[in-house]
Image 1 (tube, rainbow, N blue to C red):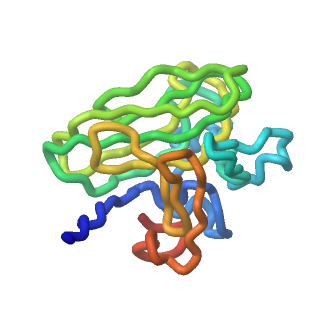
Image 2: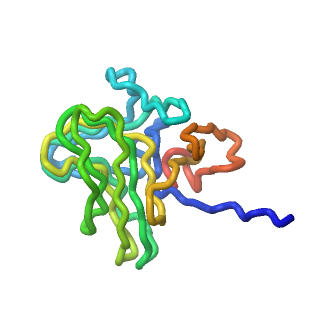
Length: 194
């Protein structure tokens, strides 16, 4: 019996669940010079419900982003990509005020998620025609407050199940912790590298 080869996936977003004390872990704040901010948070500390996945697992951490202008948000800058390949950015967002979308900078963006929608997954896929790209979860229209978790940037034609170096989401929507790194691993510093 021939064993199927494992599928190798790589999440370029370095801190998908806002864990560890590494600051933003390779991410930055688009619009920080104008006053936009992003901080690692535990959702319950901000009266935000945990993200409950379809399999019942709860994600309790992420980033709180506050914007004061158009096109501000949390960004993965200058990620190395394969020129001519399709990439997808997706993330779960909880919008307190304003609207949020997923954007590949200078390429395009997905549909908006607005306040009052609860936890929603934003996503955008496009073919990149460069060797680097910026990926942003942002406010396209102005001032906003939102929370982001389980961010995923990968070479793919659609949004796959999220993962990071400590765990992954199964097809049935259950988050499986993998602290021994037998199925997933960090390439470098934990919560600060792909």
